[in-house]
Length: 70
Image 1 (cartoon, rainbow, N blue to C red):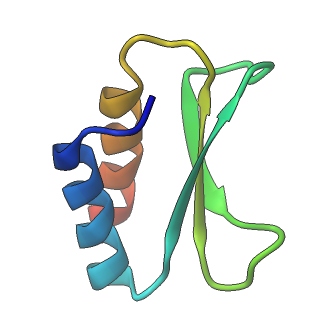
Image 2 (image 1 turned 30 degrees about the horizontal axis):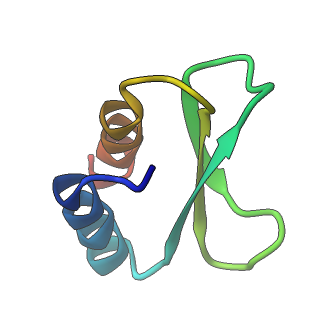
Image 3 (image 1 turned 135 degrees about the horizontal axis):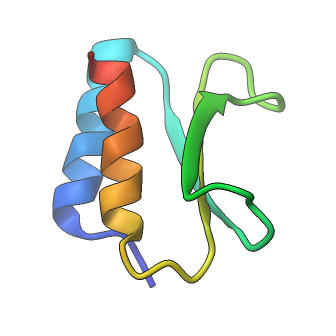
């Protein structure tokens, strides 16, 4: 299931403010709800990982974006 339009708008704001692209990925074994890091594979980007199957993934992704926007 894709992210909601509102969540994609928040991601776009992070990309505009930071100047870095944002990637999201579902990780089945993630030991937390979500986390944001700089991508180890693509220089100059953010990577948001969220636990696969959570019903509130949009909230989790938006919350992580909030850390960058702060």
